Length: 174
Image 1 (tube, one colour):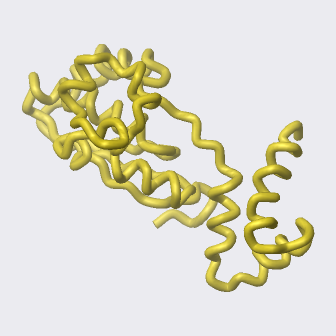
Image 2: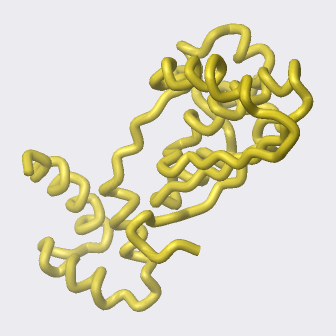
Image 3: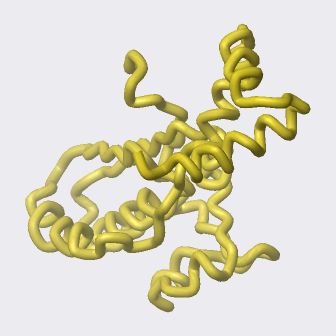
C-alpha cells in the first residue's frame, strides 16, 4: 500500500521492453516463461537496493566493542542476508580485517546473499563510483580500495573474505 506508483513505473519498463500492451499481458508472460528468467527480471526491477558503507555505524561499533573481543581461536562465519550492492558486507569485512590484524587468533568468512542477480554482479565486482565512496573515511579508502577507472575497487584481500550468492529468503534454503 502506498507504493502503487512505484510498482507501476517499474513494471512499465518491462512491459515496454517486451513490446506488450498491458500489465495483464506481462503477468501472463511471466507465468508462461518456463525458464524462470522473466520472473528474475521482475524481481530485479521491483527490488530497492538501499545501502552504504558503514550504514548503521553503531552496529559496527558494537561489534568492535562487544563481540570481537570475545572471539578467539576458531573460525567465525558471518552472513549478510540482503547484501544489495555489497557495501554492508564489505564494511563488515573491513571492520573484521582491522581487528584481525591486531588479533590473529580467529578466522573469518562472510556469506553475502541477495535476491537480485543484477545487484549481486555489482557486489561481486567490488567497483564503486565516486558518489558511493565519497563519505567513506579516508583511512579505509586508502587502505582497502584501489583506484579504478569507474571510481574505486575493493582490494582482493577484503573481497576474498566474502562469498556472494543469490538467495530468496522465502524459498527453500540450500
